[in-house]
Length: 280
Length: 327
Image 1: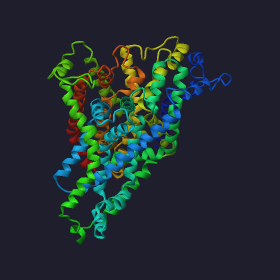
Image 2: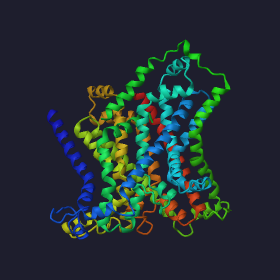
Image 3: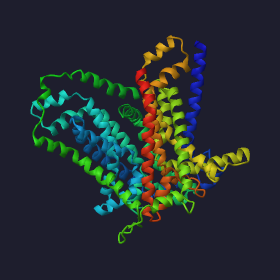
């Protein structure tokens, strides 16, 4: 028994190690080829010869006019924060009222919001473009932020209202007796208790905002000077997709910082996702 | 570690729930006043207004435009054509749209099957807490933090006719494979890349689900002489039913609208071999100013997503009742 257990453990470790390596091979190829000229990439995609390795192409990608890397990162981080502020800030009071008020009206209201979880944002963007045009928000950053926030609200509000339901009512009631109004109860009693679920919503919304390509591309337009990481990469790479001197360095610049963030915050991100899975 | 957050979130609730005692306070906050009601309504307004304006109204627009011919130019107004757009989609006279239905169905069915099998299998291998498993989970998950578009471009550079993998195969075996240049290969390559990028998310959900399965029940079954396969079949799998429902629905919903990865990997080609329904909407109909047609296609996609999710929830209800019995 003991021996077969040990064999099973070894097999498991070996299998998982090989699979992990396979998962990482694309990253390895991307990194080594970011330092090589086209000819060398085609001849030996796996090796890196220190004698001929050059940062020339990385520098060219860094200075690319189509994808301004630093601005792209700054703008994407701005989108992540702005959309989360709106989606979370608007969802907390609404979720509180929905969770705490008995009656059919608010139950229906919750269903109305939940239905939004089944609407794919990038598909509904086609008609939303005309709504934004009518509001004068088409091609503007506020329009983009509002649309992305709107697509986050259904899920955020859904997990929030489920979480608030589990918080004891006696807390609000005690505060109300002490003379605290609705808004004060939400702000000083409920919101601090919601930290774990707010973290989960933030992580999930941040991932979707970070990875969104269609919304910024369509709302801001391909010619817009404001580029996210995804629209910047598209502008820099899509017409030169077989010119690996451009592709690999650009992709490296686009993924390296987010991978560092992921490695540092890995426990927090995966933990938040798991919490969301159980609450959702 | 996943567990830390889980226990923190889990333990916070029961301990505070103990304070919920029906006391004399229970009625004090009952508000008869209209003012409090008005405040309640006002508190839901910001979320409601943003949601209605940019999600619900667009659905209404989509339905309306789907019955019109409209090129999206502000100076022209939509022209009512009844069901023309829908009959055009079903009849498909130019033979351009039906193949994308097949492509999308193949991705949604085969893709979500493979994603879930890989995710569940690896979740069983990675569920225990250890440094190695933490590393393993992160490695399986990381493609998800790269956007789908970048994943598409990356694999395009690896699998293209001159890409790294074909260059290596050429050196080692003297032949290459048409990963992206042959229509049939391209579709399966696309599905493979999607699975590579997506199974990590479902893996985390499965691990969370597995950790919620009662360890005592599994232990009891083992003491009663059940082997590993039997414990899985009769205890773990039934108790996992709610997680399975969530992972199936989320993976199918996300695969129905696959677009970014296609744009990066194949741009719909070769020919229209990898054009998905979302690609058809965004890069064909909408890009060619056929707003009415694009909206009809969007409406059909939303209806398909709703019907699929609803029927999966109904079908899974029996399995989930089993989960409650297992506890």
